[in-house]
Length: 480
Image (cartoon, rainbow, N blue to C red; front, side):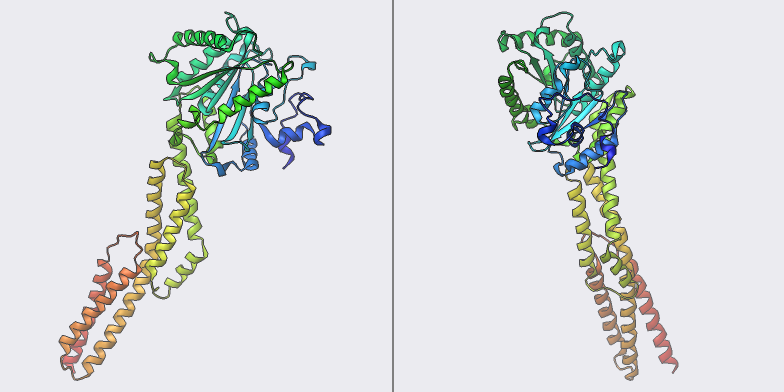
């Protein structure tokens, strides 16, 4: 891995020694971070497509098709979001160092992964809200990152402090409102799971906390309600509570393990109800995330279905061109091309059928996870282009076949007329029919199964040449 892979990690603070122990691993913190997380979007809003490409190649993400999940976390600054993700998914996001004060640790959006769990999970650690570093100008970035999370993630964790529940001026309330307001900017938003993670649970029972929190959420939603719909139309809402990490580590770890199992449970709503037609294959992830972020920065309505169709069309077209080029540059195709320049090819149709089917099969495999309608339309386009190229070989081969049949017809008539012309007309007619039957058979033999070609032009040309020779031969015979 080249040195540029690590270039952007130096701006973050040192991780807590409880999570990174260089003496145990014999590696530096940068090595650990570089191996499993990248800065996807920096604090200035710049999308780092090169780093994302490196990460995708490192984990060979394309192999998973649509069998991957994206989990994002949002919440107040210094509320333990990175710590939670690291314990949930085994990622290595840099955590806040208590010794250095409650400073901003995560700038922008960072992306990590865990490909050892199923489904393969991409994890987004999003810059905390209400940070002193951004001040009053941070609201726009908070809105943008919240919208990004809603647009791309299957699960959004909202990290909140237990002691903030019920407080009128708590930072969490403004965050809830930001999340709910951003859903308006999504055209036909897909349903995602919101998990409110209550940190440092007090003695108050979880059911009481949940009831109180859902009441607050309901009031905020009602103040910005979309088309009179309940929030359950857009979100599967869950509430969990975790004990203090520093003082109750064992209990914290146990609860986090349960939360991970729930998130990765195949029967969880975000996995059970997911519509694969709306999930773009991992091979398109760079373009997808980048285009969505650009739309957010431009303050455009984010139309995920339209975005998915547009990207599917683009990728299927790229695959179409790649597979066509691959065939036309193959040794088999080039060899066939040279052969038909000089002679007809026996069983040409079978050869072309096999080549076309092989190319279409490769296309089908490469587009398996894309929208059915898009890939079907592009498949038809590919087949039409394949048949256009195949017809060139067919036309050349049948040209040689026609010449051969005409030559044999002429030779047979020459022998027949030299035998004193007895029964010449009747026998010539038999030869004429035989030549056409043979030509029809060769046409069938040279036509690929996918083609519906009209061979009348080729047959008419043969007719003209045979009739012309027959008349010329008769006139020559009569003059002699």
